[in-house]
Length: 88
Image (cartoon, rainbow, N blue to C red):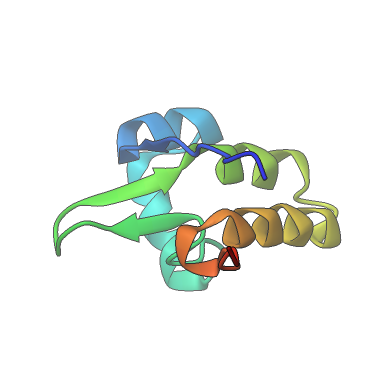
């Protein structure tokens, strides 16, 4: 299986990508529009990084939640902890 690489960006890059104010990202997180561990990850209490590919997909598929859910499933399956172990 080919490894998929995901780029994580800061709030300013994420806000520019979504064409919103950086403060809007906080509201999206609080409203559950952005999911922790999927759309963003916390590196510390003050540092959050956003999954660029999933934000791009979210913008494209806002009107098709099922399509975006498939992109989330691909991302979650690509995580090392979710990879099946190879038998020798």
